[in-house]
Length: 352
Ligand SMILES: *Cc1c(COP(=O)(O)O)cnc(C)c1O
Image (cartoon, rainbow, N blue to C red):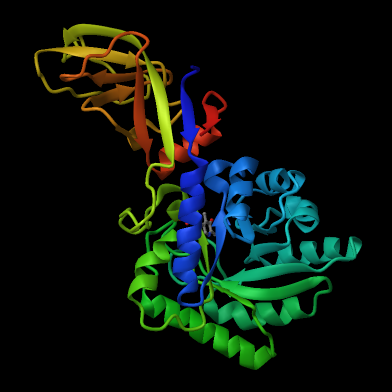
């Protein structure tokens, strides 16, 4: 069979989505599923909807359009604050977008009027992770301006943590968000239907908190697809952590020294590699490389060790495993490896 390929177990994804939906709803929190790590794959999107997920979210408008064109019956949310140059597409294809810039919202308003539609937005609030978000002290002024715009409805408030700076979404941060929401509701007489507390890193807060406050939504990608929470990458009980498997193929297998010989210079990526001397070892080369996958995010399913990689090769120490040319070698992937493999056109996607 063709390699490298990523085998996608749709039943395991469906199972994870159902369990997470039930788990979060036990404390009144709805979930939207982020499809960005699978590039808005329409088969996976369909499986999520069939598992009871009503809202799909993606960071790229091209992925949103892909899902839209697949006629999947879902509410579509653009996760990344829109590129102002794509405002028209956002209004046409996304039901909701996450926003933090007034000039962008103005453009969305312009196109919403052109298409005679109402575009819903979730205003993102900065709580310390320092990626997207309006500073809390500027929020009221922003809302005042947005309320005056035609074609725009502020449907909610959200925040995003643990993405750029690794800041934990703990009780303190979530209480801060709840307080902000309460103030805005009072001051502006807004319903704020959606209060979106974060992503897969919110799991530990969710499990341990006694009171979710005003939070009624999370946006989940990693926990649906990897079966893990995102703070410590720990598996979530009852979830599958192996919905995706990368399958590669041996293209060379020989007994060779474990340390290179000759004058050492930089490798293909500008690093000077270091190797431990383990004497003669069986080295295998796999027909997969950095153009296919983030090799550092791979875990072999056999007792072998990855020694390094170039654009098109992964070199392994076979240890006591017998590997011959043509043998298939399987790996588990972390989030970064999955992202790269799904994005690479060199990796065949196989649904099982
Ligand atoms: C990617 C993303 C998510 C989902 O994050 P996971 O860690 O995959 O759950 C949520 N919100 C925003 C704004 C995102 O960009």
